[in-house]
Amino acid sequence: MNIQLTAPSRIACEIDLPASKSMSNRVLIIDALCGGRCKVHGLAQCDDTAAVQRALASPDARVVDVGAAGTAMRFLTAYLATCEGRDVTIDGSERMRHRPIGVLVDALRQLGASIDYAGQQGCAPLRIEGRKLHGGRVRMAGNVSSQYVTALLLIAPAIGGIELTVEGDIASRPYIDMTLGLMKQFGIASRVEGNVITVPAGSYQPRDYSIEADWSAASYWYGLQAVLPGSRISLKGLEANSCQGDSRIARLMWDLGVTGNWCGSYLDLGTAAVVPDGPVTVDLADVPDLAQTLAVTLCLLGRPYRLAGLATLRIKETDRLAALQTELGKLGYVVHAEGDEALCWDGSTTLPAAPVPHIATYCDHRMAMAMAIAAVKFPGLVIDDAQVVSKSYPQFWQHLRQAGFKIEQA
Ligand SMILES: O=C(O)C1=C[C@@H](OP(=O)(O)O)[C@@H](O)[C@H](O)C1
Ligand SMILES: C=C(OP(=O)(O)O)C(=O)O
Image (cartoon, rainbow, N blue to C red; front, side, top):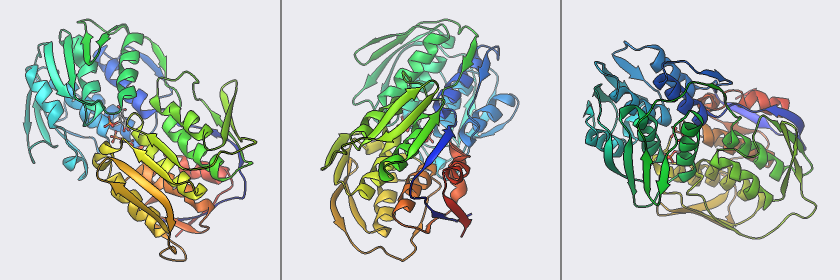
């Protein structure tokens, strides 16, 4: 479904943000390892969390299809490898069949797992014969995806504990801290010394748990507040001291003139009296999911930028560096990638490609949501395949309507 967006001149609304899929998917795996004895409140209601729920609800299924959910693919691969007697193939969308998983498979094999590639080497589908894994020492590269580290950490207590050495640069580090923090809340305390993480053998303690609202989802509202100064967007459900690394959006957007005031369970966004100016240079290796929001917002604000630390963007739902370059290019922003590392804009513009640009979304929820911000400067902007937002934020378009956007089928 393609939709056409017309933005209001200012927003005044309250948005009940969706729950964090990253927290939901970790807690679901922990709950499965506690025999389903936790009470989890406010789980995310999105495709990526549904993928984990479906898989866990079908212990006899011979095929598990996770669709486009990277976390589901990686966390379930580790979990299924521990399910003794299980013989299962885990698969996903066409894109998932090209997203790498070899680093995780190699590490699980070091711990005794039986996993074979049923298609292309290094990618899904995987044939897994669940068995009793042994814990112990294991080494893994940290620069491709933190999700591999999380996958191992989550199962570690149940397989006798591990001493994991993460080699090289560590991508998306706050997601590893989120995993360790959640494990602690379920009774498993680990030790981190440099790049070595030690998790003891043990059992997770079942408990009630409430999932926080999603800071990555909040970023689109920050972007809108930045490009529509004078708006008053009130975001519900976020935690100020969140375990989500993407809460850094508050600091990043402060530098773009967006203020945030906590009022109970609401975070009220506003516009600073003096809005800073000038080029922006920032390293986003810890928060890759914020890159699209920032790239689009900064173009709209006319602020040149160099967004670095983006090497993992090429292997996400799509090659996000290429996608941003192409789609921002359609709006006349001449953005370029510096190898795999950075996305840069020196302020150059050309005429937009068409009077009413059509934005392709490449099966990537974040392309759709980030590019929607551009409707503020490009009335009638068309977003193709708008349903992609269901991966993490199915209510996104409904929330934009609530915020005063006109949204029509295109
Ligand atoms: O662990 C997680 O919940 C996630 C980790 C990140 O992936 P990478 O570690 O692959 O960068 C992030 O991009 C993804 O949306 C969610
Ligand atoms: C990269 C993402 O998801 P995943 O890797 O879990 O598919 C994302 O949500 O931006």
